[in-house]
Length: 225
Image 1: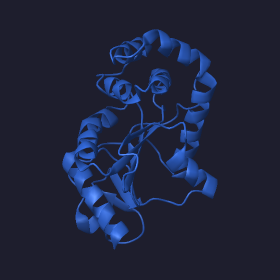
Image 2 (image 1 turned 180 degrees about the horizontal axis):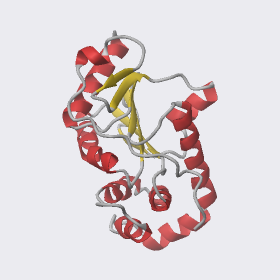
Image 3 (image 1 turned 90 degrees about the vertical axis):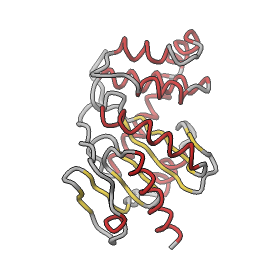
């Protein structure tokens, strides 16, 4: 497999405690927290069309409530341990909240196998099985190779034969989506995974359940204030 143009960066270190409400609401500018976390108003994209693709790309998988009043955009890599760490708490918060639209931005930057994982997950999306594939991939441990990525997705109760066909037939479209995701990450100034847009905030760190709940609450307070 030729070297992927996506592979270039490293994962972001996790935050070890919850963001304080005062820190989130302390005004404009970059807030460096705990040496690892950055929370700031998310930057404006270069154009209206770029913003539209960030939030409404028709090829991008959507979870949670598609009509939710708050949007979370998640940038991740399937070989990022901090992304894996945050997957379950994020899913729980989105499920229990009921008013969050979750946008999945596959951004495979850590290994060739990360690209394979993203291609598999987005092929699974074509048969309505993106989230099961996503969570199966995020349940992997250690540095997963191509075989581990394939085995994880095959366990997600989908049509494996169709998956292989979609991988072949839709590879160009999926690769184009990954390039758009990468361009959006560049436009946001992201340096690694995980990264989240939560309403008006950009959060560049892994969060636990309490952290996600607080950022969601603070985002709604800012949006409604």
